Length: 153
Image (tube, rainbow, N blue to C red; front, top):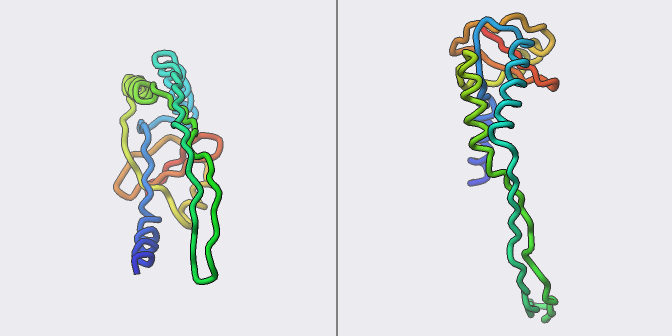
C-alpha cells in the first residue's frame, strides 16, 4: 500500500516540475546567454572552486555465522568505509555572486512550470523570439544547447 501511495505521489507531481531561473522580459535568448556567461565568469572569479576532500574511516567487519533451516555457514570478514567525497565549499558564495550579477543586469529570480506533453514538443520546434511577459500559465523548456524557451498561452 505504501508503495502505491509513493507511486501515485510521483505521478501527480510529474506535471508539477518547476524550473528556477533568472528572467528578464523582452530580451532574446542570445542576450540572456551572453549575460549568463558573463555572470558565470564573474561569479567564478569572485568565488573560485575550492574543493575539499574527506575520506571516511575504514573499519573491519568481522566474520559472521548465518544459520537457517538448511544449516549454518560463515560469511568472511571484510573492510568497509574509506569512501572519499569531494565538496566545493564555494558553491553558496558563487551562487550568491551569480544572482547579484544577474540582478544588476535587471533579471529577477523566479520559478516556472516545465512545459509537458504536446506543449513541450511544440515549444521545442518553435524558434524563441523575445521573452514574453510571464503569467501563471507560462512554462519553460531548457534546451540541450543551454538556451531557454518560454511559452505563455
